[in-house]
Image 1 (cartoon, rainbow, N blue to C red):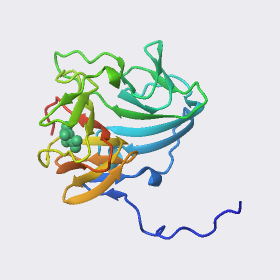
Image 2: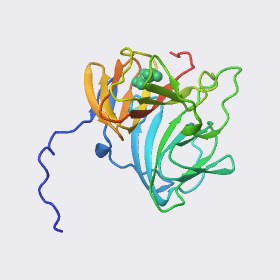
Image 3: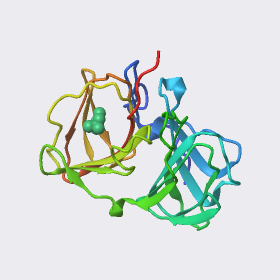
Length: 257
Ligand code: UGY
Ligand code: MN
């Protein structure tokens, strides 16, 4: 086959990416690959860092067979991993865990971790990290490895929309929450939310319309959205199948000046 020389119509200036002071929408096709020393045979898409205004970092790792972190790494921060697809091994506190799609793990600050792909097929993993904000008199959380199937689905406000709290809800030791929100088509929030917490959102399946500030953005599986504190937000699920996303949210802490 000869290489295509002519770009398809629409290549100029047509895209869905948006970065504002209050939110960012980043479809996967526009995120350039990053290289991080000590991670091999992996396409690294950095979705959020303090450079964007976030107080956490969120990355998507597409790990080829035989790739991933070459050794246990310890950057002093808390880490959360969620396996979107494929299988990976996780070394945590001297133990190796086999993770599959839907598995997740929390590694406390200062704990060494290694995520790698011992198989042949690609695996995709969301990696979230954040410095831990300790709380006087409260012990830091322990490591946790589990699967979304083992986490209760709770209805809030209405049927057809569920929340799963992957980290124990209302445990003040945690300074962030990771929730899976799932919507039947046509379902939506009861109000436009405006809150002090920030979000990192990774769309796992389906599609919908996201209202950010006063702007509507159509989004679908594999898109990333950052919502800064106080960004008005609202979601309406469209399409013919459910829409599901993984959502980071900072919680349980007072404010510093
Ligand atoms: O928990 C939340 O703040 C959630 N309802 N926000 C969101 O999905 N944008
Ligand atoms: Mn919210």
